[in-house]
Image (cartoon, rainbow, N blue to C red):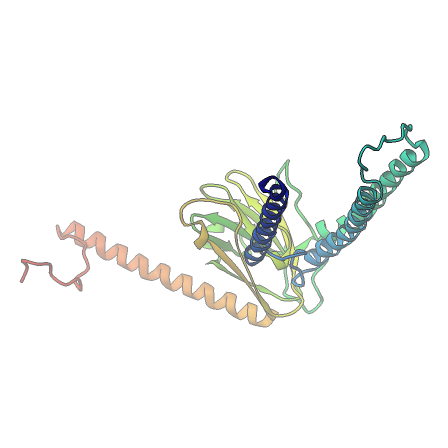
Length: 316
């Protein structure tokens, strides 16, 4: 009796194991969806290059799905239709030359079609368009000598070129101005404010360790590597907020290194840029005054401490 029940118990255990494996895979996919840019396809909708990437992804995914369903369908049909019979002797046959040549040529044709589609769309992903006529006025992008990275340029060469500097654990954005002195440029941390209808090019660098700039709805991710400059671009047609993060483990506070791009109308951006510049100038003047006060106190033999600091225990 136990020998007769052994196959049934084995089948039951296999079913339980299969159900547990499927439940685990489903749970992994559900949890991974919250941490990924998109469950099935990459996010888009913020910039033309991101839209082109998503479109190309959908085309390749559709072709891959058709191939997968076709191959697996034939495999399952063969397993069921031609499954082994007890004591059956399989027929001794040679391969089907026509079938082998057919699926080899079919695979080659699929690869050629995908290559043609990819290279035809690559220009729209790599090359930024000009800003709209009612966009923010921009300057010509200064050529960066870089042997291993492609620097995108609009046809007219004009764009708002922002330097993205990865630092543990924050992103610093430096905006261009009319002079060649980068030390007096307007900058911001964490939140990048940009004008709509304007081509924005990014020069991505790192100050300490390797980071990765990633705003899913504005295109792919780009590494920020010390001593190297990477480039990307986007053009946002309407006001909106786009969130991202550092996509490369850069240290203990990597999770805190978030990023946000806020797109506003060109007139509003111009006002924000002027206000930000005034804030930085006011903070610099206040810091300069404080440094002079500390220097005078040091010359007089006093310790440059904050007089508003409450006394510690034992002081009265």
